[in-house]
Length: 372
Image 1 (tube, helix red, strand yellow):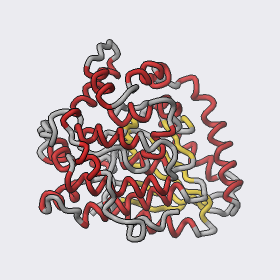
Image 2: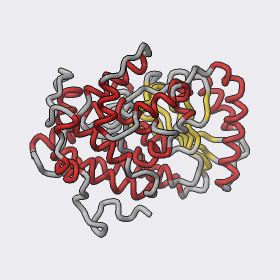
Image 3: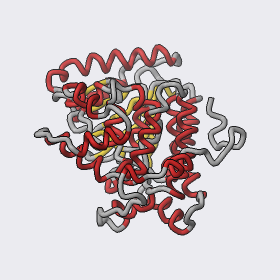
Image 4: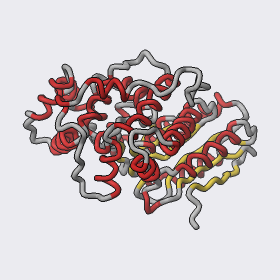
């Protein structure tokens, strides 16, 4: 039986230790199971108050992925067996996943995320919580929830709305795969190294003069990464998101029907934009509306409030949205022929979106009520 997540500590010359978390289901691209989330929550909570741990590293096993998202099959089977009901499985998974993401954001000590290979969905939720987020020439970063009847959760309501122009809306609707430069541009990544630099990085981290002062430790790690990044900056690819920011903003301007029309009638030679266009137009019409509702949250909500909003929407999606059909088509039967509840974006009833965005809990009994 493979251990799904491995915890190790790396000794350093200063006497402090570095906690290393390895997501270890390589064949499933290190997709998160509930057991993995629970184990990480326990271990990280312990490390957060352990004076001997100066820094934490999150990485994925193998060369293909850091983490390709959450393993949502258990939620699917529970939701299919209990139509129109919020299941314990959906509530439990999303609650614990968001608690883990929030812990990372609030951790205090430096968290380095080695964002090599595929980083999608729930994997991006983990990465966004890191203080030092490394991207490499192999990084492929996306929020592909529009393809399964969901929306970019795991804190997307916070970080997408803080990206340049309409980039966040574009990423949500199109599941566009960001390269390293795109990720740096929208600040999902903050350092760039080539994939063969992981071992030299760990060696250098073991030689740093760590202490029990988190602020100093953050600075130590930042300085090291800045120095190590410098020689590789010349090899960074172009960022289509940055290069075509003006066109993306125009494409995403107006209301939902304007954007749908603009994407439907778009005629472009750019292959990356053709792929984005195709994915968006094949995506769930309900997801489109949820992604627009999410974009309208703007930057008013705190991170805690974003996760609280998302939890309600996510569990509702499992009971009365397109989520089950999206998961069936992509992951269960794999026919890639989802039959969405509505034929197109215009057909979606506002009452359905109101239902989906209305929390099943009040403030007092919300599972994430203790987020501050």
